[in-house]
Image (cartoon, rainbow, N blue to C red):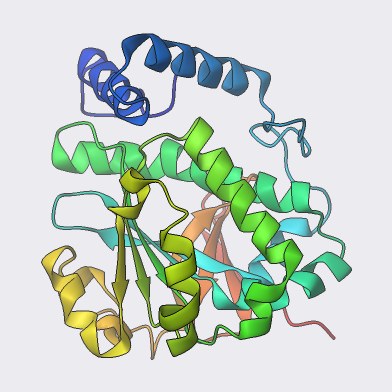
Length: 289
């Protein structure tokens, strides 16, 4: 079954129609291209691996080796935090730590292929858990995501790293190819001034028009602009909402491959590991000794 087809409250016909619409939009309305694209994605999912020869530990089916996922989460705080006003899941990512520390991540033994595999597993969590819950909540198929990327603390050297830029290029290519039109909108918040004056002008002329229309830049004094799309109850306080992220240690979470839920650190040096089977929780430090 193709991504987005399994939704709890929508009929198979509704879900299939929504999926076909996404692929048609991704291919300029050309039916033959959309059909070929959909066939490629189904074949990729059946194989359980990544594209372009990167089959990093069979990303759709297997765990990352050792503690690789935990190492990645030291540098990539992320998770779903609620829903937008139209019922789409809202995903928040604090991207600066990863951009600033990508070389260190590699020194700790995480390869580019494993990092990309982790990104795929995040999307699989969204497909298997978040979209079905959102569809049930909305009583209609929901297969698009509203994303907030927080660039607080981003340094120039982070964007000068070849490894960092290769990673984000691979993420865009993989998501575009295998998760077409699942991104509804992307809000880039709290970017430093050099991003607005130097980086964004460089990027915007290189983005495809359809993707560019989805990107919205929100400066530090403009957080209330988010209220048009997301209610205050689904936003952290530091973004003009009501969630107590400044007081709480964790916000949102992701599903690990072993079935545990990992709480996203916000004001903590540890992740929160929740085991639904035993109904227990434990804070596990991710700070290197």
